[in-house]
Length: 106
Image (spheres, rainbow, N blue to C red):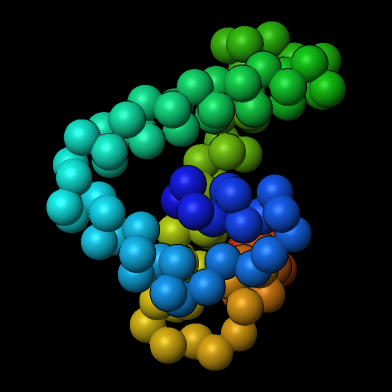
């Protein structure tokens, strides 16, 4: 996922080869996975803080937690489809899945 972040910051698409390499790195070096999870948890906490600040809600309000949980679930499904052969870019898959989630929750 570090590769995805670097590519996104450069304006590049995350590719299936990037996904393969990322998985291989985590399989070969489990400490990297642990470090990534720790870093990601800090990133999520910062996002929650930004959402709470923007929306003017308190830290004990469940909305920021729910929003990030929903987005993470949609991303997980998108990664699955991307890795299983969906030919679209990961961004397109995610946006389509986001539309589907919106329709399901409406």
